[in-house]
Image (cartoon, rainbow, N blue to C red; front, side, top):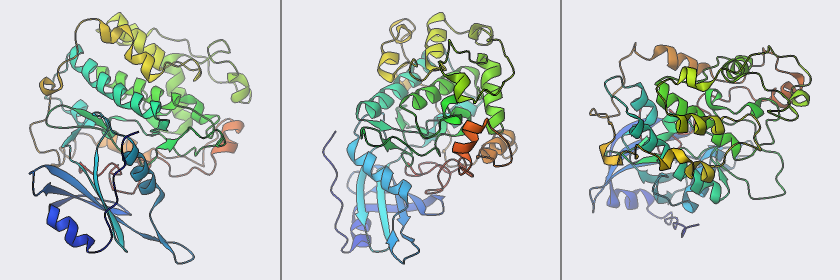
Length: 385
């Protein structure tokens, strides 16, 4: 753990931040926060200033929304080149302002940009940076719990940084056995979360990274289920319905519900241009049994990263030329945006009863899992979509 940032004293908070930073245009807004692009006066460094409103509770006490508390706690502890940096914190009677580094793109928009051409070395570079940042989180007992392409920010120098820690959780406390099931956007959600959603490990982050890896190679989401049951069907049709050998206890977890029997199709048949070492890593990231799923550290030591081609240097990676805060063409991504807006826990559909009993209070989970900063902006709102 690195040295923690001091919280600036509340006196003249607005004056303090105005003396140090020039606040420019608003780039994001949500239920609890507004996000502005700014510039540090002394250095000219571009920053994101996230202004979080205090919330009124039933007893009249003003507090900070939980996701903001989590974000501050985690980012004050984590320091890594592939994790977004929390630069300053300013407290006030009516708000809390976070100053974060500003990155003008994210991996989702890079994937969607049809003008950009990826080569295997580019994908390897993005995966390397993602896993380095995630390994640092896990080494410090932090689960991210919302790994997805638009939470992987990319700067003008090509550096990728994990952001949006509003759902992050410390999993070092042995007394904490049950965790919130309201985690991970559906398309990137590990299968165990549909059955035992309150008991899980770092492996849920690893599964999500596997989905991101596949998306980088396909240039489209790999497992885009439209409902919770549909997500399981999508996973099983792509990877085969799990057997007891592949996932010990699966029959009991699913409460003996009979799923359609899908035969596993070799990944090489879909990822035809992908090397064997990349296929092997993808298979290990997407293992059904969370106890057998590869760790971030093991993934970094995989032959995929040792073999040629070498990862593209970050500064040479494909990048978007336009200012990222410009909206994309309105018709271009309507279908995917519609799917993302619909990604929430549904009370109208029936999961296996063991899963349904655990999940029937989880409605509205996946409208990006967090309204705190607007448009998945608990990371500091470095982008406006």
